[in-house]
Structure formats: C-alpha cells, structure tokens
Amino acid sequence: MELIPVQAYARTVRPRLPAEVFTPARTRALWVPVHYSIIALCAWALATGRVPAPLWPVVSLVIGCCMAGVTFVGHEALHGGVVRGRVAIRVIGWLGFLPFTVSPQLWMAWHNRVHHNHCAQPGIDPDMYPTLEEYKTQPAARIMADYFGLGRKRLIGAASLLFGFTGQSTQMLFKARKAGILRPNLHRRAIIETLAGVSVWLAVAFLVGPLAFLFVYVLPLIVANSIVMAFIMTNHNLSPLSPVNDPLVNSLSVTLPRVLEWLTLDFGFHVEHHLFPTISTRHGRAVRAELRAQYPERYQSMPLTTAIRKLHATARVYKDDVTLIDPNTGETWPTLLPGPRPRGDASPAAPA
Image (cartoon, rainbow, N blue to C red; front, top):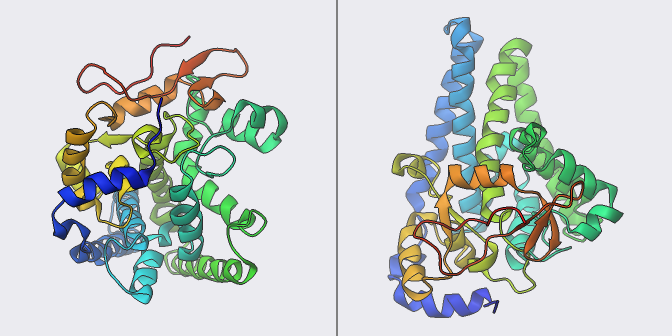
C-alpha cells in the first residue's frame, strides 16, 4: 500500500476548511472549573458523611468521569487548541493532567513531539505495542504484551484499561532522560511538575482521611484510566505499523452517541487530530467531512465499542507491519487497512 505523509493530506485538506477551524476553542477552558467543582463537591460530600455508604461507588464513578473529562481538556490545551500563550497552555495543561499527575513538560515531549511526529514507527513511537522481534528479545516488551495488552480474549488484559495510563505515564517519566525524550534540565522540570501534582493529592488525602480518599481518588482514578485508555488503545492499536507517518493508515477514529462525544470533547476524532493536532477536536466533523470527500477509501472509523471488542479478540504483538500475532499460539490477524469495505466497517479480518 502506498503511504502518504501527513503533510500531503494537510496540503489538500487545509484550504478546504473554514478559517475558524484554526482558531483556539477558548470556551473549552471552562470545563476545567466545571469538572473540579464537581470533584470538590463530591469529595466534600463523601468526607463529611453526607452520602449514604451504598452510594459511595456511584460518587466515585462521577468523580472518575470528571477526571477523564478534565484530562481531555489538558490534552487539547497542550496541543494549543484551547488557548494561546505558553503560560496559559502550561497552567491549563497541568490542571488537566492533575488527576494522573502527568507533567506538561513530559507530555509535550513524549506525546506532542515523539508520538505525533513518529506515529506507529516501530522502535520510536512509545505508544505502540512491540514487534515480534522486540517481544522475543526484550523482557519488558513481553511483560507489556502478555500482561498489559488488551487482547487474545484474556481477562487479564483489562489491566491495561484499568491502570494503563497511570502505568505508562509513570514509566515514561522514569525513562524519559535515558530514552532521549527529555534533556536533563527539562527532565528535572518534569519531575518537579509531577511532584507538585502528587502533593495536591497527598493534601486531599490528609483532609478527607484514608477511607474517603479511596473513593475520592483511588477508585475514580481507575474509572478515569478506563475511559482514557479506551480511546488511546482503539486509536492506534488495531492499526498497522508504518514507516511513513500516514494518519489515514496508522490511526482510527471512533464514534459514540453524540452526548458522550460532547462530554469527551470529541476525542474520538483521532485521525483528524493527527492530521491537524493543534486545532480543537470541536472541529473534528468538519475535518472528517473533507477527509471522506477527498479520501473516501482511506478514511477509517468505527464505533468505540466495536473497536474494543476487536482489541479483545486480536493480539498486541506485530509479526510484521500489517499482521498481529499471538506468540504463544502462532495465530495471526491482519491489522486494519484502508480499502473498499461495507459502509461503517473498518475492521480487521478473521484470524488467519
């Protein structure tokens, strides 16, 4: 298959989009006080005993949804899609990623620079699962694929949803300097930003007490991980590796009922995001319309629930760029690939 670099798509699509698509979506910053007000109110209600004990898990679910929601704001802000100005971007980004205590400095290096510029390139993109060679030669790759990879119809793979973003961001913080993602001075800044976030949650734990903290932060963090990772894994981990950064090949957009897309800030428009990462995904539909008009057989999208089921049924190791393999059984599956297919279907074929 011919791979088309992201710049070529952008040159075709950008002139066809209205100018307002490329302006910051400043009102999205209002989600930050909304989400944190709900989190604070729920935390206060739990800590003061104003919620019956049987309803504490329900309150945790609400807090977790708000944590995920504010993380989507942070992601968009650190790409420059919400506000302009370095200080404003960093402040909103830090608040956005506070539930996971992810440093804006780390995120902009790991995600904005490395992942976006080298998406799905084996050995470079930190968000991709290992190749078969890496699986055979690197113990860490085997652990990630065998125990933290959703797939092969194993329930243990759910750990990647429940704890995946916390685990990966912690791993990236520890390895960023050695991997050349951050220079020593910027790595120190990332550590300071992370510790500042940790201190906030330690203060919350002190104020609400250990039992309430379990429902104010620990269980909600699992909920937030699950929501965020459901998008992260479906956005790329059914797609092929690609030596050329071709977002219509190495990325997948996922859909939800409209109200849920609104609450998740249209994060599912991920092909669109990789084409124009600095614009707000508020304009994802406009970009999608042009992509479908210009590249009808290359654009790939499916419902989020369908993508998760396909992740569960396939493996997370790459035999080659376009084939997934279960190293223990030898069973293989083709990755997603553009091409003629029934409307609404962008799925891998049955196991080989």
